[in-house]
Image 1 (spheres, rainbow, N blue to C red):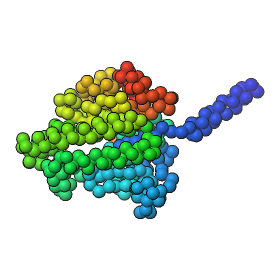
Image 2: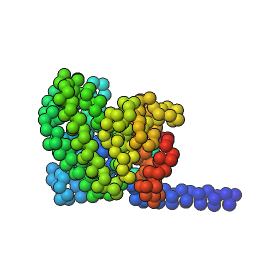
Image 3: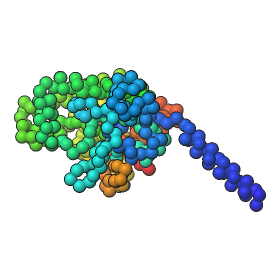
Image 4: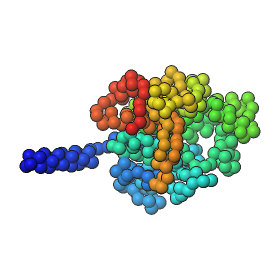
Length: 335
C-alpha cells in the first residue's frame, strides 16, 4: 500500500515538474503573415511587446507606434500598426474580421501549442474586395505603373521581415498568393479586361515574384512555409507567387483530401509542391465566440507544416534537415 502511494506521489511530482519545465521552456516564435484576433488564443501563445502600450506613442523607440502585438499593413494603404483586437465579430452579412488569419493561427496551435505567435499583418481579410473605394484605389495602382506599385510592396515586405528578425521569429506562415488566373478574373469582373491590361498584370506578377524571391533569399535564418493555392492548377502554369519560389528556406504545401491519402481536388500542384498536409477541417476557432463549422483549403495545410517546422527547430534540427524530412514524409497529418 505504502509503495503504491509513493508511486502515485512520484508520478504526480514528475507530471508537475515536466509541466513546469514545459511552461518555462522558451517557445519558438512563429509569425502568421496576416492579421488575426489575439483574443482567441491563450496569452502564453501571443507575443506581447513589453516595452509598448496602446497610447499613440512609440514607447520603445523601435519606429512603430503601439506595436503591442506587432505591426501590419492594409495591403498598400495606410499602415495599420496594432489592430489585432477587432471591434466586432458579427456573423451573417458582415464577415468576421481577421477570420482567415485567426483560423490559420488556430491550426498552428492545434498542431503545436508550444509556439509564440508574433503579429506581422500584411493582408486584411475583411469583407472588402469589392468595396467601391477600394476597387478604385486598386485599379489606379495595378493599372498604373507596376514598378511603383511593387516598390511599395517591397518596402512593406522588408519592413515585415526586419520585424521578424528583431523579435527572433524563426518560421513564417504564408497562406496567401497571387496568380495570373486571379488577375484575369479580376479584370473580367471589373469589366476592364484587355490584352494591354492583362500584360500589365503579368508584368506586375513578375515584379511581385522578384521582390519576394530576393526577400526570402536575403533572410536564410527564417523559414517560410507557403500555401500552394486552391485552383487545382499547376503552380508553374498559373505562375502562383510565392508558391513557385524554391529556396533552401522555403517549402510549398499542397492540401490533402479527407482520407489524408491523396491530394485534395482543389489543391494546386507542381514540381515545387513537395509536401501535402491536412486541408479539410471542422470547428476551427475564428474569434473568441465563433468557429468555422467547415473549412478547407491549402491555407490550412500550410500551418500544419509551420507547426511541424517549429517543433523540429525546438529539437535542435536545422532548416536543411527539416526540409529533407518533410519531402521524405510527403504527407503531414494534422492532430
